[in-house]
Image (cartoon, rainbow, N blue to C red; front, side):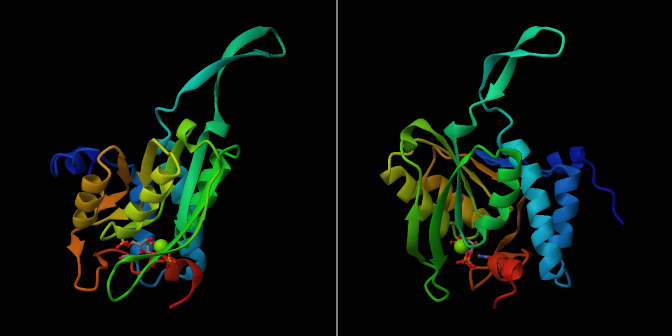
Length: 224
Ligand SMILES: O=P(O)(O)OC[C@H]1O[C@H](OP(=O)(O)OP(=O)(O)O)[C@H](O)[C@@H]1O
Ligand SMILES: O=c1cc[nH]c(=O)[nH]1
Ligand SMILES: [Mg+2]
């Protein structure tokens, strides 16, 4: 087995502008198991929930804290707290829900938006079927989650929709991204930083991420 250190990973090339690759060893290890074709639906779902807590840790690393006065058993102190209610996790259905679960474990006070989008298998164009979001999106940080950024069409449509409803401060979190999708997404939404566990090689002729992990929604839910 070849040993790859984080330093070697970093030397692979400059990170694309506005794109953060989360190359923590735990994330990379779990991702490898998820990619394996023999990994079962139940293991895939469990790993996605586990990995989502690690990704959540990174995507929220620079969140603002406010100071609150609290009483410890010994004294009074000023201690930092998150403004969880200001945070929205926006899940692109269906596969986004796999990331959403673990993120809500870490930030239970976060608000949630569901965005129903699937991509037409022939045209690879997004088909929108559902949208629900909390109010006052302009005052909140919205973290859009979907395991896969392939052509970018679904995530671009989801972010378009959030912006139509007033969202101004948005981040996009995924597990795998294709270079083509990152390019399209960043061109459409240059103000939205992308966080991913891997930038894979390319899209195949059917628009699947290569080497990828297959269809994330199908692998999560055991559908075809
Ligand atoms: O970047 P794109 O080319 O748009 O592809 C990525 C989209 O495809 C998958 O969803 P899918 O359409 O399979 O729907 P599902 O989650 O309901 O299975 C994935 O979860 C993304 O939403
Ligand atoms: O590789 C891909 C591309 C789009 N959607 C997926 O679930 N997988
Ligand atoms: Mg989808």
